[in-house]
Amino acid sequence: MAGDVDRSFLDWPFFEPQHRDLAARLEAWCAANLPVPHDDVDAACRTLVAMLGAGGWLRHTGASEGERLDVRTLCLIRETLARHDALADFAFAMQGLGMGAVSLFGTDAQRAWLDRTRSGAAIAAFALTEPASGSDVAATSTMAEKVAGGWRLNGTKTYISNGGIADIHVIFARTGEAPGARGLSAFLMPADVPGLTVTERIEVMAPHPLATLQLTDAQLPDAALIGRAGDGFKLAMSVLDVFRSTVGAAALGLARRALQEALARSAARRIQGEPLAALQMVQGHLADMALKVDAAALLVYRAAWTKDQGTARISREAAMAKLYATEAAQEVIDMAVQLHGGDGVRHGVKVEELYREIRALRIYEGASDVQRVVIARSVLGG
Ligand code: COS
Image 1 (tube, helix red, strand yellow):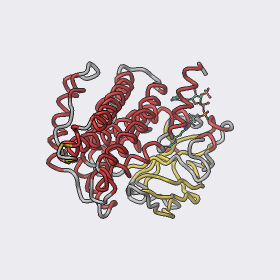
Image 2 (spheres, rainbow, N blue to C red):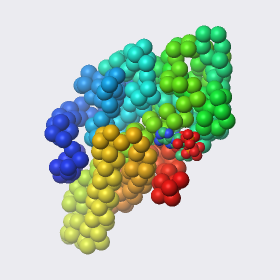
Image 3 (cartoon, protein in one colour):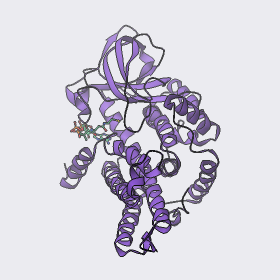
């Protein structure tokens, strides 16, 4: 990797000694273990989940009864993994998002799955999005019909990360207690439930396991319901409240790596007899990049710290962290590509990979304009 990364943010008062210790240990682990080959993304993700489990890192993706998810830890891990290998960040993040509803609201029996996802023995997925509802969660149309002893689910879920390799899914479906947001529920569905099939694998610009899932009369017991029937929308939003800040953290990791690569390139590449970094124009760009990285870090760790203080809802802080960090990372990475000239768009050059990796983060877990809606409602007092 090019040059030393700026780790001075770890001295900020948002962190406690255990966070600083974890960041140092994870840095060493990443240097020894990452990146892994990405040629077969399914195999790479299975390997990464097993490695992250064996390393003890996945323990932080879930919370046992009485414990709380530590959002600063989640953010530090995502930032660090993303800086070394975006697919490792993906593998880590999905264990947390996938099981987020169980960590927050699961019964003891449901929590048995957490033992498996936190050790790396099982892979998790979060199935919210549908072909006709992405940003508009209240329009979810997958149906869960009450039958004797359980529920019968029918519908389609799409853009499901880990779809095709997941062992366990949290599925959101309409149970009809009320129209719109008040009539949804969340269910825990193992991959081997008859009626759950993978109908399409989706290829994307930064490859990772992604699929469309079909539910055809998929039968679940009463014990599969997470939380109360009708609370699914609030449950999804509570999970996103925790994990949206961590998407900002992943973007921050990608941006830090781009800045690192740009600094190394500007020092090594010569123009008219001098390093690129001697040009004031280049210095101005590097300054803007560093500023965006620090501003993103402040917003991400402000949101994480606020949640860790026990604040019930951090929708505004999380939305600001995700919106700013992902948009800023896109700009930082774009400039890093520019400073690399032709090499910046060449396969195999790190900044080209970062350019592809960052794009989806401005869309998933609430697109940038959804975050603007959340922030605007908060400042307008709605
Ligand atoms: N925690 C707990 N409850 C919440 C909440 C949160 N973070 N956010 C909203 N709620 C509650 C509201 O208080 C409201 O409760 P009442 O009905 O009791 O008043 C209810 O949920 C409905 O909220 P709201 O009226 O804001 O719902 P909208 O349909 O207007 O939804 C947005 C608004 C767009 C913000 C929401 O649908 C959203 O976040 N969409 C993006 C979804 C997403 O991230 N998709 C990606 C999937 S993962 S890749």
